Amino acid sequence: MTSRGKILILDDEPNILVSLSRALELEDYTVITAKNLAEARVALEKSGPDLALFDVKLPDGDGLELMEALKKAGDLLPIIVMSGHGSIDDAVRAIQLGAVDYLEKPIGQDRLLLTIANTLELSRLKTENEALREEAREALGESEILGRSKAIGELKEQIDRVAKSEGRVLITGENGTGKELIAHAIHAASLRSAKPFVSLNCAAVPAELIESELFGHEKGAFTGAVGRKIGKFERAHQGTLFLDEVGDMPANMQAKLLRVLQTGELERVGGNDTIKVDVRVLAATNKDLEEEIREGRFREDLYYRLNVVPLVSPALRDRKEDIPLLAESFLVEAARRNHCRAPKLGPRALALLAAHDYPGNVRELRNLMERIVILAPPNAEVLDEGDIRHLVPHRGGGGGGAKAGAYRADAKLSDLVLEAERAIVLEALEAHDNVVADTARALGVERSNFHKKLKALGLR
Ligand SMILES: Nc1ncnc2c1ncn2[C@@H]1O[C@H](COP(=O)(O)OP(=O)(O)OP(=O)(O)O)[C@@H](O)[C@H]1O
Ligand SMILES: [Mg+2]
Image (cartoon, rainbow, N blue to C red; front, side, top):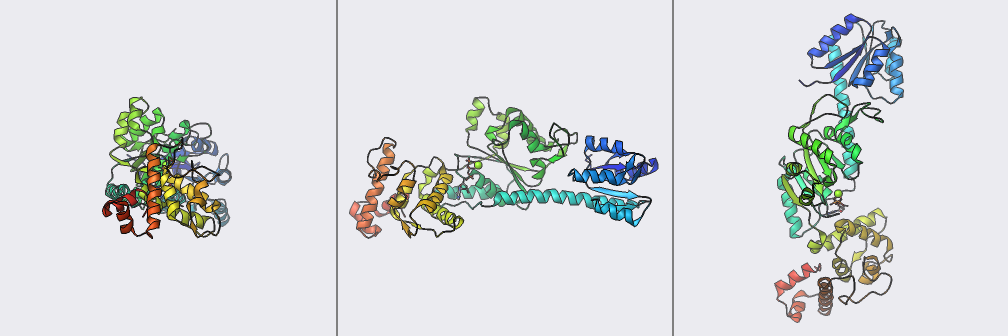
C-alpha cells in the first residue's frame, strides 16, 4: 500500500491522538504521534514527516515556540496549528509564525482532511515548480539543432520518431557534437514535454554524492544531510531524466540505477519508504561503452537497459557542409551577446573555417565565432581570410601564414590536398565572376559533380 504522506500529530490528549490517527489512516496517510515537545523533536529528526499538526499548550512547553524554532532554522515542513483555547490572538500568532492554517478544537474531520490534502498538494506544486525553474534555467541559451547536411537531416528524423515513444535512448558522439541538445529535443517533442526535464552530469558529481543526487535522502541520512532532499528521479516524475556522461558512473551506482530501471522503484538514502516513479531515461556518453564493458568498467546489463534506441551525434568534420550555416548563426548570436553588429564571412574566410577539422566539434566552432566577434577588425562588413587567419587554430598564428595546401608538419596529406583544392576552386570562381557553370567548364568538371564538390568543400 502506498502512503499519501507522512503526518506528525503533536497533542497531549490521548483521545485526540487516537481519533485523529484513525481518521487519517483511513485516508491512507501514515501517522506518527507525539504527546510532548520532546517526543515531537525526536519524531521530526527520525521520520521526516511531510506535514505536522501542532497543539499549542503542551506539558513541556508551547507548540508555537517549536514551530518558530523550526521556521527560523529554515525548515520547510508545513505545520497546521490546532488549539482548544481558541483565541483570535493565538490564531493570528500561529499564522504570523508561519503555520499554513489554524484549526479550532473540536476538529471537524472534513475540514481537517481538506486542509491536509490542500497543503500537501501545495508543497508538491512548489517542488514541481522548482524543478520547472531549474529546467528553464538549463534551457536558457539553448538552441535548435541547426544543419542541412544529410547526417543532421537523418538525426532529426530519428529524433522525431523516437520522441513520441517511451523508449530509452543512448546518445553517443564526440565532445561538443550536441548530445545534450539532442536530449532536450527528444524531451521537447515527446508526450512528456509539459513535465520536467531533469539532468544529471555523472562526471561532474563526486561519486559519493551521486546516489543522493539521483534518489534523494532523508534528513540525517548521513553527516551533512540537514534536511530532506528530493532526488532527480523523483523530480523528473512523469517527465524525462537525462543522465549525461553515463559512462563515468561508478560501479556501485550502476547496480542501483539498474534496479530502478527494472522496477521503477527507489528508496531515498536513509529512507524506508519505497517510492514509485514514472520517468523516461535518456543517457549520453562520449565513451565507447562496448569497450568499457570489455574492460569491466561498465555493466553489460545496464548497457542493454539504457541502449534501447541508439542515436549517434555526428562529428562536425564529417559534415563540413554545415559549417557556413552554423558559423553565420553563431556569429549573429555572439554579436548580439557582445552588443555589436555581426560581420559577414566572405567566401575565403568560410573556406578557411571549413579547412579546420574541429576536434571540439560544434562547441569549438561556436567559441571560435565568439573569438572572431571580439577580436576581428571592428567595422569590417565582410571578413576575409586574412582577418581571421590568426584566430583559427593551427593556422600560422601571428604571421602571414603558409600558402593553402603547402607542406606543414602538423597537417595530414588529405587535409592539405583539400585545402589546395579549395584554394584552386575559389580562384577559379573568382576568375569567372562566381558563375558556377563557367567555372565548372573551365576546370573540366561535370556540372552536377562540381556542385557536389562545392558542397563538400563548404562553399555554396
Ligand atoms: N546541430 C547544432 N546546432 C546548433 N547548435 C549546436 C548543434 N550541436 C551543438 N550545438 C551547440 O554546441 C554546444 C555543445 O553542444 P552540447 O553541449 O549539446 O554537446 P555535447 O555533445 O553534450 O558535448 P560534451 O560531450 O562535451 O558534453 C552547445 O552550445 C550547443 O548548443
Ligand atoms: Mg554534454
